Image 1 (cartoon, helix red, strand yellow):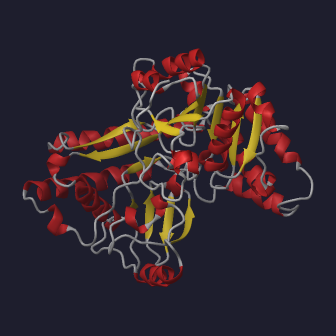
Image 2: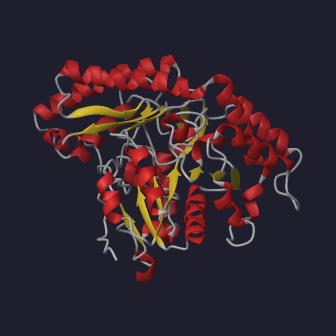
Image 3: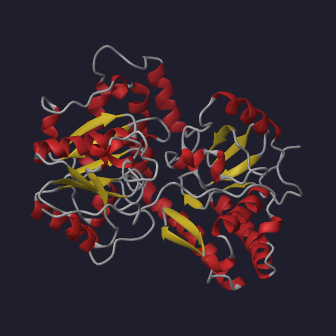
Length: 446
């Protein structure tokens, strides 16, 4: 029988997952379309590799094992799997068509809604992915300022201008690589040192897990304005989560441009670029940014339904409330067990991260041990609490019960130095994403 969300006696059988994987490796390079969903982020031999279906905050793998999901499709499932209001909107639109030969009325409906709720949305563009809109923001910033250089902080997609500052920059000409550099979050001096007369824009995630300190975002806005540099917020994770209007609403800092995806369509592929009208007007004639599927109507219908539900149900408040139960509950358990010096849960309540200090051993091996024991108990986990509106009090109570059991096992394994020997497969790999001091390039001032 497949495992349920319970204190199962055995680890899940993942025979069908492994069969699919063996087929995939023969023809796919690599097998995953998103690194965070790939086998490298889950302990090999225990974790499932392929999912079959989802409902609310639960998923079932291809072998029929059930799990509470705290990854939620790596962000987009803000309301939950198969959320009725959104699915009904998609089905209703499907009856009328998907993609058309003219613009669709839902484009105006969505843009009007965004104009009301996002502070800087004087003008709006609609596209499909986060990388689309961050790259469009960079392009229009260069056009508006007449400058070339970009400073970034966080993860911004796969396009040349950003990936050039990472370790996976093969295939990008050196001339392109020379135009991008990184800054350190919460270090305004690193920004001042890097800004020069040819800096078109600074793009950053308003926060990842660490909170802005000492009015960092306000200071950043001021130094960018003083230098004639545009400020771009990458709000893929913060938008519609920390507040309906995103981090710019929450912190009271209005960027020149802002980019959104993930949360606002509950899983459908769509993204937004919002910003100053004088900057965005360059898209009319000077800057090219168009895509065939930008007006695809199923995603538009899902976005409108999702945002309306978020407003009606005050979803950000729910995410914060339920996320706080998990974050504070985890930290209380770690404190009671006397292991809070090497593991804690950090970040904002709507999206938190569990960390492991090297004093407990290899952090990736410690994470893998916790992951394998949670998977045995029916929790799909990779260190995050990506909260959704479908995570119930029952889900959270069970998760905290599982955390208590697993952290007790971890304490014993760490004390006996047995974490490595207790792993039942290859440990998880390091996450590609880094947000500070990542291949920072020296900036030569003129």
